[in-house]
Amino acid sequence: MSIETKHLVITEAKPKPKTKVWNVHNKHTKELLGQVLWYAPFRQYCFDDGIIYAESCLNDLGKFLHDQMALRKVEKTERLEKIRT
Image 1 (cartoon, rainbow, N blue to C red):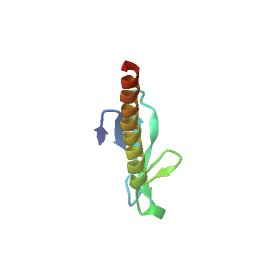
Image 2 (tube, rainbow, N blue to C red):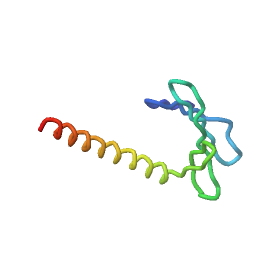
Image 3 (cartoon, rainbow, N blue to C red):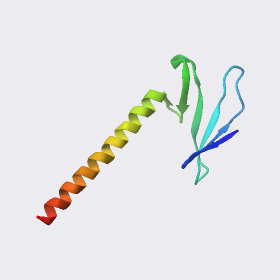
């Protein structure tokens, strides 16, 4: 099984006895970014690239990135308006 997104290719790796593991690759460079696997201490699937990220952590990071891009657009508009006046 393989799932492709705009930037990722996710393929099922060798399953463990009770859970599944997926490899996450960069779609363009084919580089292995990490794995999605069951992390027992959190009792949920997490992303592991050497550091364990739960879904809520990745959502928080995504929101931070979104907010920073919105702020950048506002700041850019303000700079352009200052230049014009």
